[in-house]
Image (cartoon, rainbow, N blue to C red):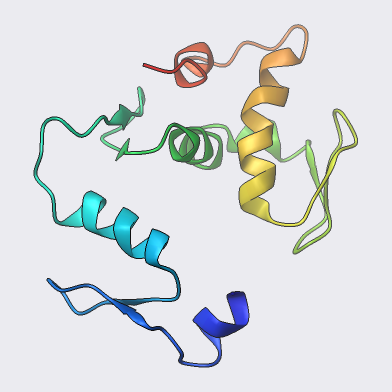
Length: 125
């Protein structure tokens, strides 16, 4: 999928509104809901620290850990690319996105560390 999206130019799914192209229909659907639907009934997951809102609970966790927990994560992240290890629990990840999703949960389990708003971010609703 990465090769198809980034290197082959083969992006068969096209947004009817802005003509942006995508490699997968699911990504096109997420794009449409996020960018082109102004619907109050679509559930949103706001970040408690900034203006960011996501239509996905997981994306809120990823956003929060990337943008608001950098100083905590510098010591937790070992490696780059498709070989990232969490130094707290030794789990390995094939992408930084997977690591950042995991990091929110791992940060929550570290004794003696208090991260403002972390509990709120990790709670659905």
